[in-house]
Image (cartoon, rainbow, N blue to C red; front, side, top):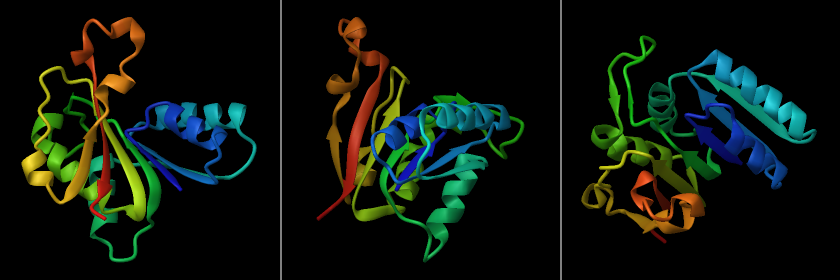
Length: 165
């Protein structure tokens, strides 16, 4: 089971489905982007169960992570915007200030062997590992920066996050 948060056009969901995921859940606040995601899924995949949820990812994650028996995922892709002050949100979002809570909530939805990939394009981002010390965090940024950008690797950061064994 695959979860794609801040999904935009659903590319990660489509990739997971094409790669064999039997079910995907795609969450984004924009109905327009979700329509694109549904179309992209339809154009690329014929099998599996694929849910598309229009919701503020912050609110959706908070609600799901607070439920004792919420759905669990084997793989979660979390690629939030650097900043957002959308009229649909209660408060402004800043990835530097909100990433610990966001990662914690997403990690709570992992299966025991599940993996969370967290990425950001905020060039001055600093992961607060001290407040996430109960998780196993591996920086995989170098492996995820396209070759075209190898000379400026600070354009993107990415971590593989799991629960401690």
